[in-house]
Image (cartoon, rainbow, N blue to C red; front, side, top):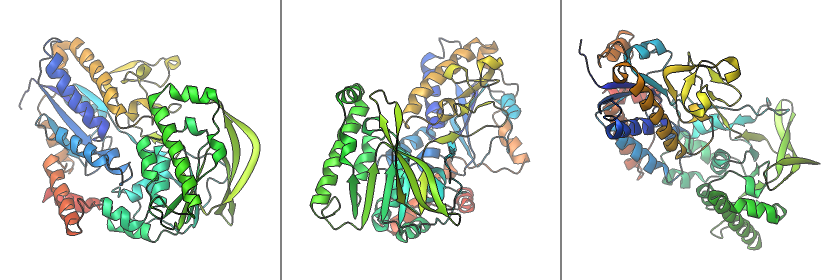
Length: 484
C-alpha cells in the first residue's frame, strides 16, 4: 500500500462549480498552504455520474450561446492538470458511498448542480402538452439519458418565465433548423426535430415588469437575431415610472438589461412598420410575443390536452413587488413550457433544504449540516461541503460559481488547517485505493484521456459537415470511444 502525504479531496460533479472549485483549491493551497501548516500538495478526484464532464455548460445551456465554447475550453484546460483526476461515469451513492469517500479523502465537496424543474403548480399543469424546461433542454442538448424525440406539433406555444432559461427555450422553439445546425453542435435528431417544428406563434409570459426581468443582455441580443421571426411587444409595458427607472439604474446589469429591452421595443416597432418582417427585413413566418406583467393562472384543456392559457395582468412596483389586477385574458396555445426555476439535486446521505432547494449548509457558507434548519438543531458535519447550486439553490449565472468556489475553498482550508495532522485525516491514503474499489464493482471510470477521445470524435464528425463540433448523445457510444 502506497502512503502519500498530499491532501486528498473528492469533488462530486464535474460541471463549472466542481471544476472551478478544484482549480481554486489547488491555487489557494499553493498560495496559503505553507502558512496554514497544510503544505502545498493535493490530489483532487473529480467524480461525475455522466460519461463526459462539464455539466451545465454542455447540457444545461442552449447550443447557440457563443460564449459556451470559450467556457468549455477554459474548463478543459483546468482538467488537464496532473493534480486533478477525472472519474466520469461514476455515480455517487450508487457506485461509491459517502462513507467510502470519507475513508479515502480528507474532505468531500458536492457540486451536484440541478437537473429537475420546479413544479408549475397551476390548474391544468398535468395536461398533455405541458412541459418543464429541463426536459426540453435535455432533448436539444443531447443529454445522455434524455429524450431522443420531442413533440413539436403545436402551432401556438406559450413559455412561462422571466429568466435566461425561458429565453433559451423560447428561442429554440422559434429557431430555423439550418441556421441552428450551421452555428452549433446539435446532433442529427435535434436538427430533424427543429426542422419539423410547427410552431408559428409564441407567447413569452413574464410575471413582473420590464425592470424586474432576469434576462442577461447576451440573451436579449440573441433573441434579436432570429431569422424569419417578428418580435411583438406591448408598448404599455414600457411606461415605467420615475421610481422604477431610478431603482433599475442602481444596478449596472439591470440598467443594461432595461436599455436592451428598450432597443427591442424599437426593433419590434420597425418590424411592424416595415410589414411584419424579421431583423433583416425579410418577411417573417413566425411571431414571437413578449408579455410583461402577465401571470399565467391556468392552463386550459379539452380531452386532456392543452388548448389555451389564462393570464392575469399584474402591476409591479419599483421595489419589485407584484400585485394582481383581476384583469384576465386567454390565449389559444397547444403547448406550454415552464421555465420557473430548477430544483438542485439531492445527494444520498446529505440533508436537503426543501424550502430553499439546496443541500443543507450552514448560513450559506458551504459547510454541510445535519439538518436544513438551525431550529432543528443543525450541526456542521465535518469534512463535507457544498458549492454552486448545490450550496445556494438555482440562482446565479455560471460566473457566480467562481465567487462561490473561493468562499468554500477558504472555509475548507481553514477547517483542514485546524484538523489533526495538518488536515490529513482520511484513514486510507493510498491514491489507488479508489480505483481498486471501483474495479471490484465492475465500474469503469472515464478519465480525462477518455474524454479527449470522445471530443476528438465529435470534432471529426463535425468537420465532415463543415462544423466545429457535433455531439455524440448515446452513452454507450461515448463509453466505447473513451475506452477504445
